[in-house]
Length: 404
Image (tube, rainbow, N blue to C red; front, side):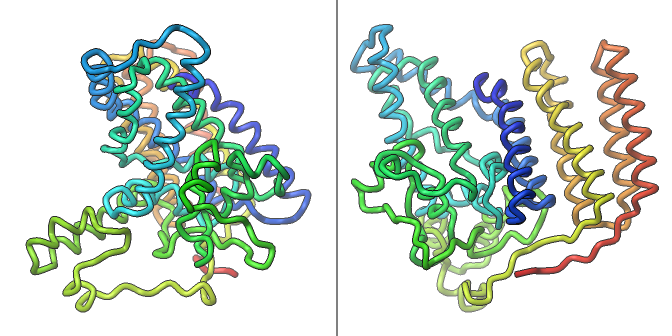
């Protein structure tokens, strides 16, 4: 996944450009709280990937070594076949991720944003534990593991640019490839758009299997999920549907349903639970966005802290091969803890100053304990002191509200 790590600076350059375009056009497609939640979901996903990649890759390499039916040459044809077959497998993984409760619980975080911009592309899951099984056909075909990793990364990189509302339809290109227009449809919760356009690179799979839907001028896209997240916490964004499934499985009197709920279609609930613990039904006519009105001072503070956290995450991922297991665990935990603390600032807890002292204190403790760079430690300490002083000055107190 080194391709992803080294692409991170380019991602953020494009995000800055999109925000400038958004500001110039006055479209307000980009919101601070939503963007930071998306970015931090991506941060957690990258950290989590370090710990959950071992089993999938081990299984994949074992299958390639033991049951591969083809021995592929080191030739460009191998790469083309791998790229196309991977996208075909991705289509089915993605489609099942919308159609089965357990898989939706993992994928929902990516759809939980009620905005649609380049930061949404980085709102990735940390809870996908069995999705790798959809790509095992590549192992049976004998596609080498290093090529799998490369084409998976390229597939994900391609998907970044389609998460924007600032690019219109692209003519003939729409017929073959995934584009911003047809992927906007995928993220929309309008009835006509639900469960459509699953392709990663090629939209041809959707046209072939009957899941394609064109973006309609008369039907503007509403974004998000039909059971809204209503939180800025990226950790909760990963857990919310799992928690709902656990509660339903616990409360149902049917032992059969306690098991089946995980594999039933998305949204299915046991009848007894649905009657005793009903959930609000989605109504597009009354849908309103979840949003915080943040002052300029708070917005600047959040952006500064987010930039610091992203820099720290980038250095962590870049240098991770030089860390001990303890360092990997402590650094990873510290970064995830920071994402939660930043979500509290967006929520405007009265204890923001205390929370920031704890967060920045933890980061400095980790640095001074685990880092050999006196310069890095000194810079981090100065940055932390300035940040705490900023919180004392800012003292944000905006009110939570919904806006159309």
